[in-house]
Length: 209
Ligand code: SF4
Image (tube, rainbow, N blue to C red; front, side):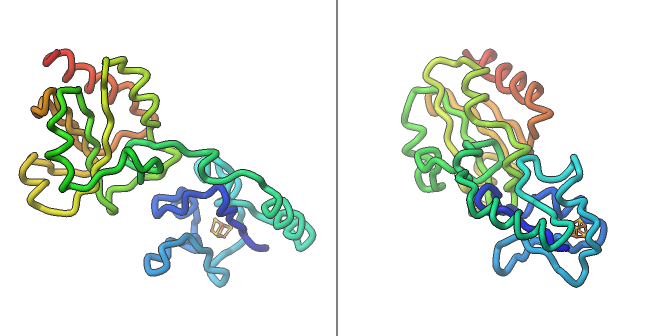
């Protein structure tokens, strides 16, 4: 029986856990069409992509045991009033949802003219992680409690930028105070590692406060 993805609440990302849990590679990312899809010919109808605890955390992947269930499932999805924005807010390592957070490399110099403390997340398409496993940016703000802190997401597309800030890995966080780089944290931190990330950021700002 088919697997159905509720794209109303799915972030449709290459990092989907459904791909990881599928034992036969039927749950796939189509790089050309930039979408998740299920290869019906490979699928062995095990249901793991929908039922495994390791799979989708918001229940966007559904599995029908028979035609009757499939009909019900489709109707349920059709009537689901939720959208992706009801579930997601801007998160570390993920594509920004709120446009004011998002900047181009060319805007960085302008951003750094402020005296405000800045956490600048740098990422590119290849470094994007699963939204659900990433740390909400709001939590980073609330937990750090740094007055006037500003959070920016900068999409990087040149080697020049990477070299300028000596960045080896994306996503990374660059910390600035009065336009001056005061610290850097390289690599992705998932929600399970958020305490470690908070402590590292706090330490950088405390040392330069
Ligand atoms: S039902 Fe099983 S085989 Fe089919 S896509 Fe899901 S995990 Fe893969």
